[in-house]
Length: 235
Length: 285
Image (cartoon, rainbow over all chains, first blue to last red; front, side):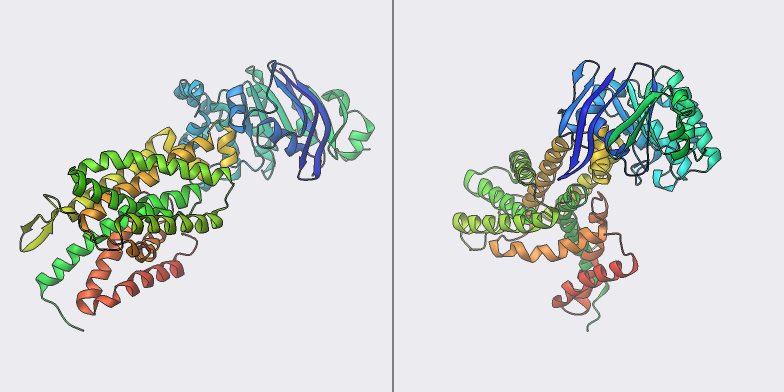
C-alpha cells in the first residue's frame, strides 16, 4: 500500500536522507531502526507531510502523494504519532482527540472511534477534560496514539513511542501497538529500542546515515551478527 | 488631589466601564491576530478609523442609519482582512516584520483619510448619537452602552466559537503547533485568511462604534495604540474574553485616576498596570 522510492530529503543544502526505498504492505507492521541522527524522524515526517521530499516518490494506495499539500496527507489516509508526541498542550485531552478527527470522513465516526480509543487506553477516559500538557509522559503517548487513531487512518506512523517512558509503560505501549495492528491497521514504526521493535514487527529496515543498509524479516535480522553487535549489545 | 462626591465618582467609574468596552472591542481583533496568527497588526488601528470615517460618510452624505452601515462595513473589511493576510503570507513576512509592514499600512490609511476627509474634526450626527437616559442619578449615554454590549456579545461569541466549534479548536491547535495541525488535515492557509478576515471585520465594528461615540480626526489613530496594546497584553494574547476584562479594568482605573488626580494621569495608570502584570506574571503575554 505504501511504496517509497529513492526518496531524498534535504534541510537546506544538508541532505538527511539519500535514496531511501521502503514499502509497507496492507496490514503489515514494519519497523525502521537505526542510531540517533540516521534520518528516521526525517523519513517518517516526510511520509506525514511534515517535511518535503526533494527527489523520489511516495506512492500510497496507487496515488503519488509526494508533492501534495501538507494538510492533504491525512486525507489520503496517513496519520502520525510524532516524535516527543507534540500534543496541543494548552488544549484538553478530548480536544486533542477531536482534532484527530477534524476531517469530515473521520468526524462522521467521531463518537465511535473515541469509544475504541478509550477501550484501547482505559486510562485516557478519566483524563478527557484535563489539559494534555498536565499528563504524564506515558499518558501523553496514549493520547498521541489516540489522536492519530481518531483520524481513522489506513497507515499509522509511529515515531519513537518508547522515548522517555518507564520500561513497564514501554511494554504496555508496544502491546497496544500490536493490538492496533492485529485489528488490521498497517503500521510503520521508527524506533531506537531495537529489540522491542524487532519483537513486534514483521519486517524491518536498518537506516544508517540517511541510507537503508539492511532489510529483511525481523526475526532474521535480529540473528545477524552486525545487528546483534551494533544494536543489541550482544556478541 | 481632590476627593470627588460619590455621585461623581460613580459616574466616572461608569464612563470607565464604557471606555473599557471600547478598548476591549478594539483589542479583540488585535489580540486574536497577535495570539493566533502571530501577527502584530498595527493596521488594525487604521482599519478602525477608516471604518469610522466610512460610516460617518455613509450616514452624513447618504443618510444611511449608522447601525446599518455595519452590515456593509463588516463584510467589506472581512475582505480587506483576507487580502492583507494573503499579502503577508505571500511574501512570508515574519511576526516582527509584520509590525513594520502594518505600521506602513496605517500611515497609508491615515494619509488616505486626510486626503478624503481632511484633518478637520468630524462628528457623526445620528438620531441616537446624543441619546442618554438616567438610572439612579447616573447618566447612561446610548452609543457607549451600545459599544459595551457589542463588545460583550462579540467576546462571548468568539469564546464560544473557540471552545465549541471544530474550526475554533483548529485555530487554537494551529497556533500551538502549525505543522502538526496540518498533519491532521487542518488547512492553515485557509484558516489564517478566515481569521484575519474576522479580526479586521471586528476592527470595522469597533470603527462604527467609535464614530458613534467620539469625534474623528486622523491624527488620533496613534494615540489609541499604547493603551490598546496594554489591554491586549494584560488580557492575554489570543484570548477572547481577556481584552474586554482588561479593557474595563484599565478604563475604570483611568477614570478613577482622572477624578482623583488629573486627566493627564490616565496613561500612567494603564502602563503601570501592564508593567506590574509583566513583573508578577511573566510569560503570560
